[in-house]
Image 1 (spheres, rainbow, N blue to C red):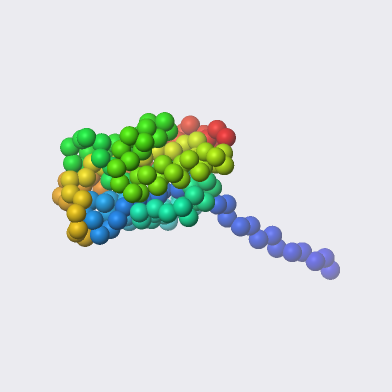
Image 2 (cartoon, rainbow, N blue to C red):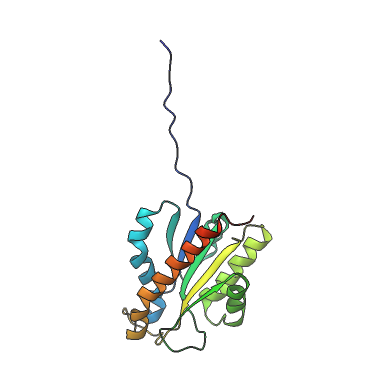
Length: 173
């Protein structure tokens, strides 16, 4: 009788991190959490995608950011646009947005997390910010009407970005 051991395969770690940022107690700052909630069905069907609510950030997120091959950050971002405007900024354009508009605590921390990833040579080559221009950032538990209306557009922008990245093949190391 031959002893056969079943090979148990462990699933590969997700390669795409979708990081939602913001404070759910500050109206439009809750955008990141709202988009993650809307993306949940897609993430359940895609083992390569990890949704992570980063809240207002901390240095504990350096690990997940450094482990991701691809990173999409979703945030309410002041970009000088009409409230509810969705913009996708990739790579260096994302980095420039973070450095120019680091006017709240979590944007500064995200730039710091990127600096840590650069120092450890683990910054995802493919990275993008899906930003939505906020209308109201004040105490409140509901998104403003223009930002709430932008959630489906932000989800569609993420889906299109990921489809394009898949069509381009594996990211360069």
